[in-house]
Length: 152
Image 1: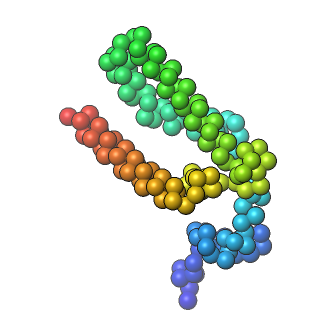
Image 2: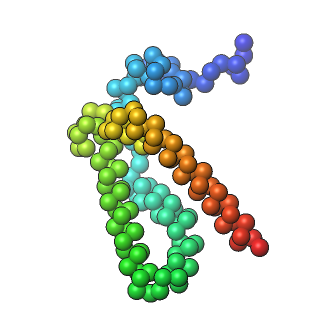
Image 3: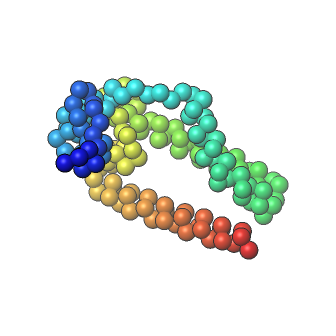
C-alpha cells in the first residue's frame, strides 16, 4: 500500500477531501459553504488577458475573410452587432455567478451547468448539457475541417 495507490486528496478547511468529489458525496456536503470562502487570485488584468487570448485565437483568423465576404459596410455592422450580443451574454453570465441574488447571493455557481440547474431546474440542465456537448463536438469537427483545408 504505497503512496501511488492512495487517492489524491487535498486539504480543505483542515479536512482531507478528494479533488474530484461529486456533489452527492459527504465531503461535498460538508464543504459546500466553504466553497464560497476560497481565495480568488485573479485580477482585472488576468481576466482581460484571458478574454483577449480567447477572442484572438478563433476570431482574428477569420475576421478579414468575413469582412471581405460581407463588404465594408455590412461587415462592420455585423462586427458591432456580434460585439453587442457578446457583451449582453457576458453580463448575463456574470449575473448568474451568485445565486439567488447577483450581488449578495450566498451561493456561487462554479460552472455554467450549475447555474442552469439553480435557475432553470434539473430537466433544463440535462437538455443544456446535451446541447453543450453537441456544440463542443461540432466546434471540434469544424476546427478539424478548417485545419485540414488550410494544410492543402
